[in-house]
Amino acid sequence: MARRATYFNKIWDENLPLLVLDGGDLFGDRNRRAQIQSEFLAKQTASFGYDAIGLGERDLNYGFEFLQQMIAEYDLPFTNANVRNAATGELLLPEYLVIERGGVRFGICSVLGPAHRITTMAARDVEYEVADPVTVLQQLVPRLRELSDCVVLLSHFGEQPTETVLEQVPTVDIVVLGHALRSFDRPRTVHRAFVLAAVPEGQRIGRADLGIDLQTGQVMTAQIALTALNEAFEHDPVMLAEVDAFKQRVDDLRDAQRAAFPRDQGSPAEQFLGDNNCKACHTEIHRQWRKTSHSRAHLSLRGRNMQSEPECLVCHTTGYRHYNGFDEHERANLSNVQCEACHGYGTQHDRTGEMLKVARESCTRCHVDSERPCHDEHKDEAFDYARFWERIAH
Ligand code: HEC
Ligand code: HEC
Ligand code: HEC
Ligand code: HEC
Image (cartoon, rainbow, N blue to C red; front, top):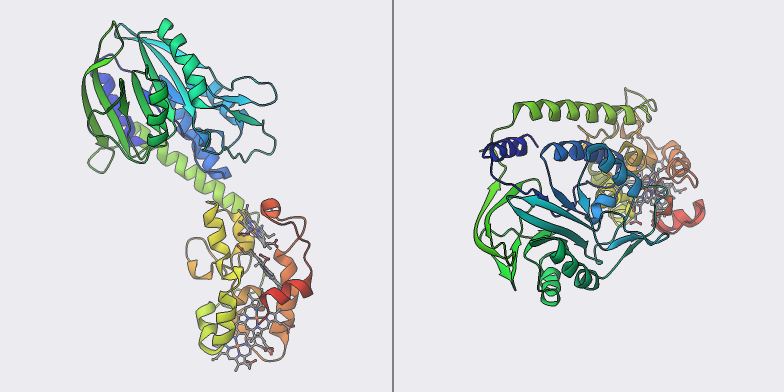
């Protein structure tokens, strides 16, 4: 972000007529911290002076209301022509934007590929309806031609499907690809359209210096430059200070969330030894455990990009609420639901039957039927000791 600021400062200093476009997917993953990060991103993106941003499916990760809030708060120029509120039938965003720059009127529109599924983490969200981009563009682009000199499509669609669309709507002049897998470092045309892509977003930024025929709207001359925002790029000090302050806020928030799960169980004098220790003597049981989903519980969080969320770690790791238990910074070896998550501290190993008793009583700490945030992720099955033990027995 601080390098991006340096880049934009230089560009704005050139004083050329400049159109700043984004193909969409501004927002982050579906968890609360990423949402806060996305708000920060929205604010800073606005400060770079974007003219138009296409809607990506990720931009609805936190629901339509959040997107609307960001747009209102930071004046973000989102646009989309094919996603509607299913209940009202209305488009979510302005259908198109017309922006005059350097004597050229640009008619800018955007479509979202129907294959990019919208999944939102908002508790209550509107139902979305994604219309076929070809049908939508076939009637929109001719209208845009009337209103502008040059038609720009922000295609949140990927490369291949966009080319198919362009075959059926051959009157687009400029395309910026969102959700693309590769960047184009030289001019590229599909039919009359001049196609641009710079990925991955945030790490690379594309610039095209274009000469445009005012009569036809077509791109006549072009020069492309891709800039990697890497170490070679200095940080803008003002933005860097903002980013640092923001990171601190996020850390504080994580600590606050962690505080909801105080480390107050067990004893500071005892240690978890890790499943590798047990494996040395209980080889067969270890092999058995490996086959159960307990041994992959942390991985399941990774699949949802929730691997650092305290509210999930409490059940998907070992000893999260115990002294010397899983620590997101230090004790990565206690991830997953290991032997000691059920049997207790290895340093309390004995043969009195205590470790068995503790284990039999452990299940309902995590298999709570009502309080599991991941409850509706899958089959909603009430916990029953006999039946559940049977599935993982050793
Ligand atoms: C520290 C928390 C924790 C404890 C204690 C725990 N479990 Fe689990 N259990 C989990 C988690 C988390 C999963 C899901 C793992 C995954 O797929 O990510 C799971 C999954 C399971 C499954 C597989 C469910 C399925 O069909 O997919 C069974 C069966 C099960 N546990 C039984 C038990 C039994 C029996 C006990 C007690 C003897 C127990 N668990 C103790 C957290 C725990
Ligand atoms: C109170 C304990 C608890 C908490 C907190 C918890 N989980 Fe789980 N999770 C479980 C248990 C137990 C299972 C096993 C499935 C069952 O019992 O139906 C499970 C299963 C899962 C699965 C299913 C694995 C699969 O492939 O079927 C996923 C994914 C998951 N949890 C993600 C999460 C996420 C994300 C969070 C945080 C938002 C979370 N869990 C918080 C206890 C918990
Ligand atoms: C999900 C909880 C859970 C996990 C994880 C777990 N166990 Fe157990 N284990 C139990 C329970 C419950 C029993 C007792 C069952 C019974 O009532 O006999 C048990 C029994 C045992 C026994 C006694 C077996 C016997 O023959 O009597 C040993 C040894 C043992 N576990 C070792 C391990 C080791 C080593 C690991 C890790 C590789 C492990 N357990 C992981 C819950 C667990
Ligand atoms: C140096 C070898 C050794 C290591 C390491 C070891 N155990 Fe054991 N464990 C034994 C022996 C021997 C027994 C008794 C025979 C049996 O039940 O297999 C036993 C018994 C148990 C029992 C049954 C206790 C009872 O009261 O009947 C459990 C549970 C258990 N171990 C869990 C663990 C766990 C969890 C770990 C890792 C933290 C572990 N063991 C590490 C050797 C070991």
